[in-house]
Length: 291
Image (cartoon, rainbow, N blue to C red):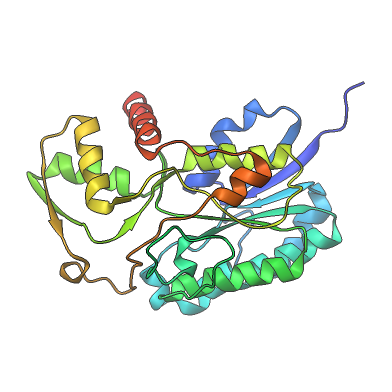
């Protein structure tokens, strides 16, 4: 007789991370996965949350769903706060009641971007836009709701799925002979597939270490460097011109520095992220196969 299967709930089924988890979930037969999109679990409607817990009694809850419109959040404040700031606390409280381990995804935007060395997970936060404020509130609510919460902050996420910088660059470079890309914002990209695998590593270890962790691919580059690498690896000929942040104004301020220190994740879970260009190469190869 086989051992009972642990259930994992994943929100944000159609987002970048949710799609990557859906892609790899068959590699984890010890778990039963329940993927939920916005129609099945609207994170802005917390009154519906408990029915999901009653129905599935999950061992793990991966909250990959979020309000991700960084610029729109400046005007859609109520919705952004409901999804990013309030929902994680409600989910965490239910996780606490149902003995469920919560893995909640957050962002580098909780920092002000004025740093010059990689941000540690325990460093003071100071969001510079409303999206960052909502994500920080969500972290605080999740940790208050359940002491066994694992928060993973990530940055510059891209994937073969959804809307992201890599896919936008490929499209624009195909359509235009020249594009402008900001060169004075520095960070490290995150291939959502790598983040999905890291999350499942944590799940397989029982999410036994709690608190806040950081995950991105290794390295430090600007958006301009990233665009140049995409162009060269994809074999495109579009001219990429470097511009400054002030030449590309957006409703929400962007952090100038977003590099994350991943040492606590490496120490506690033995997860060693790979170099950003290797991950990008794999994503581009996968996109070519999908085309």
